[in-house]
Amino acid sequence: MKRISPAALFVDLILLTLGAFLSALSVIVFLQPSQVAPSGVSGVAVILNTLIGTPVGVVILLGNIPIQIIAYRMLGGWRVVAATLYAVVAYSIMIEVLTPYFPVSGVSGDALLNALFGGIVGGIGGGLALRGGGTMGGTSTLGRILQDKYGVPLSSSALYTDGAVVLLAGLVYGWEGALYAIVALWVTGAVTDYVLEGPSVIRTAVIVTDFAQVVSDAVLTEMGRGATGWQAQGMYTGATHSVVYVTVARGQVEDLRHLVFSVDPNAFMVVGQGHSAYGRGFRRALRANLAPASPTPNGE
Image (tube, rainbow, N blue to C red; front, side, top):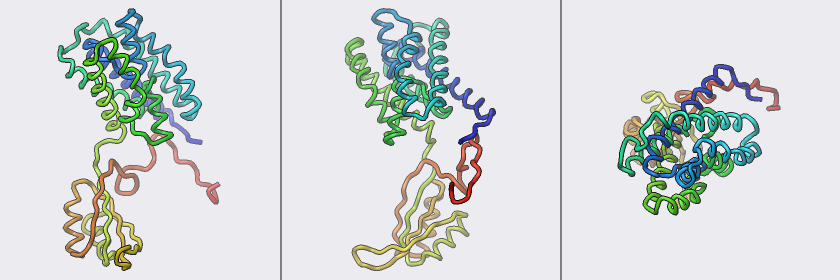
């Protein structure tokens, strides 16, 4: 059983609150003034507010009830749902409370700028909520389910789950408004992914060489990085070679390339891109809010 410390719960609460605040600002300041429908239940709430004047926050709250019932069954029980419910309630209240303090026309009359910055601010808010253990509710919860169960990136799942909202926005605000909604939707998903995964700061290299030990020793000595090696067979020549796998920081790629080919001019090296690495020399493998489980004999 994962144990969560009170300090970690407090940090999660801060992340969820800040995520709700930024998500509310994205709607109040950028999206709603330009009639750019935000994603999911929030988009439906904004559209209904335009058509019949229903309170945005109340519709968001009511619309999330059936979605959170699904999340309870598919995302691991009460903890994710409780965190999401807190974020949704805070988000709904903040929209209602903060709206009178901002101009109805927003901060810009340019719909494209509002779509872009609404997506950026909303994406940061959604990412912070996910880092806090919840979601901003609505279709972001459905996107979390697609990500957890099927590995679909949030930037892609947002397009899948919000297509109907974009269509409805087109019918209400016109198809230009729907195009702006798609821009905001894509930016929100991309920024959320960035907040969750961070910048691409590491590179992985697969090196095929006949001097594996020399290359590995050089990488360790000159660059302070470890390496993993194994034997492989070239399928064209049938010859046996060694493969060395190395993970380095982005700025070390050129140093690695010069080092490898100075040792073995006939080596073959492929460099791949990664977001982050966990373990010795890189990030900690465990979240700070999870106490490591006590090991038991035979893995039991």
